[in-house]
Image (cartoon, rainbow, N blue to C red; front, side, top):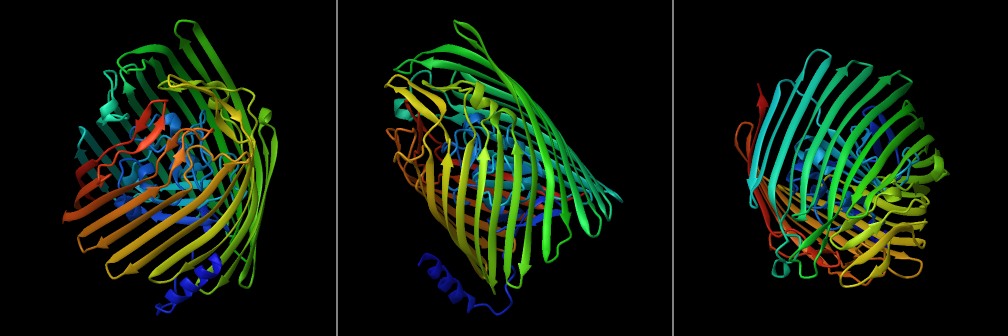
Length: 629
């Protein structure tokens, strides 16, 4: 019934069309010249889509995509980086992502903990983002249980210079700059971004004690990228760095990160086939201090210091046959990670947890066309050392009926526990989460199907999915009192996720309306709902395009969810409203305005066991100039 309704809706709008509609996007991009057809639901955001969304960092701008969320409801503007793992389609996150995020083909997931440093990626330099929901291909292995997010830097242009400055409430200041130039076969591009804010209280203001201070962040990030451009060959070298410091809501709770990543990707067109390769190395230092808080929140006691050094090296090789009736991509990838959690516990002394992790994959993914029918098949063997070996098959089909595309797929996927989950203990306020060196990999199998329609003025997508997860890693509650919560990462009971997702977009003259909805019933087999996963999520956005003006009003809503595996700590639902405006003042000079949480609503984001809250109204105004020099 649901899919039939989607067909009728799409056909009704199809009658409005006078020209042949453009095709539905059906492929995901691995590297610049390596694309692979897939039966997945893919949402593509271009640079204008990214620019018109509110939010300092990219995670806030992606929240309008159905099902996109971090471990907790907080923005990366205030959240501890260890809670910035990505979840799609209600699969949940335990801090580590169950979604792979790649930037120009290179993994962004922290090698030690799996989370994402969103401060590394400036939204203004993103050319497009591809969000693929579900592990419908075998091209990617670990951390793709709920899908992947691929980010691509805008290409270099001759003598392009951009300068930006934003300021807002809470003492917010963000300068940025970028430059690129094209020579005959060489391109260079670079960017720099800095950010500072006084932050905001992450507890209810009327219940804050003397030790409660704003959660603040300041960071500086930048990158330089060199590209060699030839008719058959492309080579890119990139160095990106990040330094950030965060205050976590009390004087004694702070964290800081410094990291550097060097990467390269290469592709060559042989005519009958294409070859692609990536290589990367990353090193970082993460520091964290923890404290125990008095019940009246008027004093705190330092409990430990952590120092977490880690590094990762990896590569990927991809070979793709030239697009034809039968397409195929094959390859091999490897990642080696080592790291340690060195913790000075007060007053007992030193506690060390350390290890390494090597994962190697061999994979192939293909498709074959028979008229309007397209069949998909994939296979991956993943060899994960102590985590064991895993076989990841995938299969599916797509049937094109004019502007309508029916798709269906079935697949298996997995996630190995991160070194963070195995060896590092952490606390948030008086909620302590212990490590567990005996964790086993998570395993998932899933089926899904859906309909996509794309016309000249209207696009729609509707789909349903069912997933079963074994050995799900969750923060299992061991004890809970009003003064303290103690949890441990454990392979909890198996879980199921049943859901539907709907997206549509309508264009009328200078207006564009977009809306999305996700229903995901995510439960342990024992009946409890997965923590940090709402059953209902939705968003709506209306944009007006003028000759020199762009105005956007948007809303995102989330149903109630639970903080814990026992479903005893309830986080009510909410709806937030945002507006953005961009006005061209002169050639290349643009003024911007962004207001988040327009209604100034207080949102409950967690319990430690004291209630935690998100940001109230945030606004920023800025100027950005881009032009040739």
